[in-house]
Image (cartoon, rainbow, N blue to C red):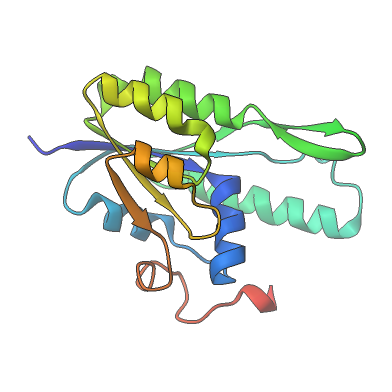
Length: 184
């Protein structure tokens, strides 16, 4: 039987990495997952994010962003083997902050260990180092993938394998041949 792999994608972390490092957002998640699988068996993909409520999106630009994000999340939900797990946005000192996402990823990595031999964590957040160590202590492998500027050296070192999501690695993982980020 082929090695089972479960993906844990920190959506907000990846989003900011794609903007900062590659100036594009048209990543084809199915292509990325297949590339990282490298012939192994997919168990499931968990995509973690936050989404504003309609009430939180008050300005016209926020409403448009809200609609695009809902469309994106719904497309992911319809993708075979993908699950979308939402945290929440909480108003704190005049701005919204993400709550519940990192804890959900860490808990799921530990709770779902019977579904995989290898976890692929797509995030650059060093807060996951302890969860990675516990998963490895349970006899599992953990791989990390992240873009350059959001990647944590501590997380890279905690994991068994690291993939740098740069232009070269992602060259065949885009929905479009050229970036459409600036025109969106």
